[in-house]
Amino acid sequence: MTIEEKNSLKKILVIGGGSGMGKAIALKLSNEGLSVSIAGRRKDKLLEVAEESNQKIKTYQADITNRDSIAELFSWFDQEVGELDILINAAGINIANRSMIQLAPDEWDKVININLTGTYNCIREALERMRPRKSGLIILINSVAGKRAIPLAGVAYNASKFGMSALGIGVGEEERDNGIRITNIYPGEVNTPILDERLVPPTPEHRASILQPEDVAEVVSTVVHLPARAHVPELVIKPSRQSFV
Image 1: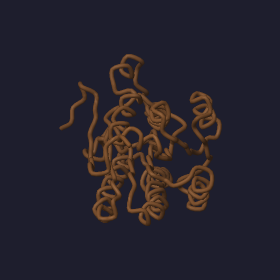
Image 2 (image 1 turned 120 degrees about the horizontal axis):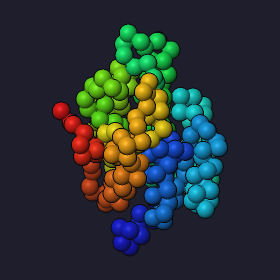
Image 3 (image 1 turned 120 degrees about the vertical axis):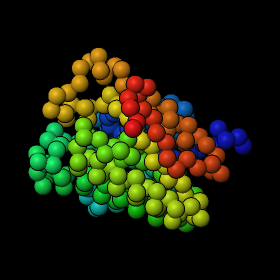
């Protein structure tokens, strides 16, 4: 059996698959013939993606900040889809008031709970299923804000993404002898709905000049199709004209 044939049998769960990068990733992998399921908070967005895939993509409404909800999601996947081979977490938010002087405690909690604690919740459930089989791939859609503290991203977002980076790298080291690979992907500026959360949203011209969700989906597809002997711990992709210093 070729690598392509083996990959076509893999079962993938994309968290945050209703919009932005998660949607593009889900559609890309589904179009490649892989079994893809998506989860997210907004049922209407999930159903739109399923319709776009001609109902090839299965959907489940879940809240990654709620551990009971996540446990139910993974139990549903076990029963309705099968063994989890690949988890992709693309869920994430930002807020409008991003500087320390503007940032309210409840907004800090919201960003950390979704971007960081939500990632922990999903990884924890995935590992329970991957460890017994000593096989699995977890891809975390991080941000260059997880490599460099960018004022534009804000202190809460930066902290959450640095935390996600440490979580992915740390757990990856713990689990490598169990055959589980974890990849942190750090996109630069991407034209997704999260840009609407800025106090001054970018212009259409600026949106067209930066990464598109499909660019990140191409990178994810490459990682997904690698053989199990190959591991990409970290990968940065950014707009050509965006600085990385």
